[in-house]
Every structure is written in C-alpha cells, then in structure tokens.
Amino acid sequence: MGIFSSKNDTAENASAPAAVNPDLAALTGDYTIDPAHSTLGFVARHAMVTNVKGTFNDFTGTLRLDGSAPSASTASVDVRMDSIDTGSEDRDNHLRSADFFATEEFPEMTFRSTKAEALGGNDYRITGDLTIRGITRPVTIDLEFNGAAKDPFGNERVGFEGRAEILRSDWGLTWNAALETGGVLVSDRIKLNFDISAIRKA
Image (cartoon, rainbow, N blue to C red):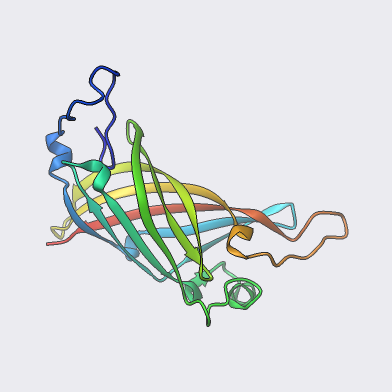
C-alpha cells in the first residue's frame, strides 16, 4: 500500500478492496509545502560539456494525501518565474527575458496533478499538467517517499524526493546558439529535481 495509490499482488484479488495500512491512513489530510525546507531545481547541459544547475526560490504548493483512497491524493504547485537563480545575475536575466520564460508576460509556472500510482516500496509516480509560458503539457514525476515526522515545533511533516526529464521545446522554449565545434549552447533536455517537505494543516 502506498500513499498515492495501491497495488494488489495477484489477479485474483485485483477487484477486492485494498486494506488500508493504519500508519498511512493516519497521514490523510491537507498539507502545505514548506518553501524554507524544500527545493525546486533543474539541470541543463551547457555548451555540450558541462551542467548548469538552478532553482526557483519563490513557490507555493499544497498536497492532499488520502490514506483510505490513495489514488485520490493530489498535488498543486505555483512557481514565481522571476525567482529563478542559477548563480549568475546575467544568466538569470536572460532566462527571465522573452528568449526564455518571458516572466513579465508569464509570471507563473504551475503544476496540477492528474494521476498518482505506486511503483512498490517507497517509490511512486505522479502525472500532471505543467504550464510554462501559457503552454500546458503533461509531465511524469518519479517520487520517493522519505517518511513522516513531527518536528520540534509540533509540525507534522511528510517528505518526498522527485525527479523528471522534459524537453523544453515542448513548452516553446527554443532559443539556442550554435557552437563552432558543433552542437548547441543549451540542451533541449532538462532534468528536474525536487526535495519537498510539507506541513499538515491544522
């Protein structure tokens, strides 16, 4: 049994109601992502030889975990695109420009889950609609559930790590520059990575 969805072991009991793990059922509730202890990051190949890493520093999100009907669990995230941070102000300003995210016209990136499933153990997969520059495309994120705990301040937390790969051109992000030695300056394939800590709402 998983937090997001359940699997039965045999075809014979495929239609039988899944038993609810009491520990998971206890996690049922609404959660708010804690941006101070969470990271939304990405990695792009630069000049065909190295990786550039970046993060978005301003975002909000909610989770709905349902331990009794795990497939009903959902996730929603809103990201302020001008909060992009790659460690270079010149590069960040270029990414905010019309060549890339056009943040003045499209200030937010959003994710809304549409499906969740368990892969076994602590591994899960969540599919949803990712909207960038007004273009919405599906994306699938592999997640690892890191557990639940109560912190010293009494907050009930759950934690997840996630990863996905996308082609930025699917969202109209096509700017590039050719290299004299062949290839291009910025890879089309982008790796996404997430470390999420969420606090249960009172």
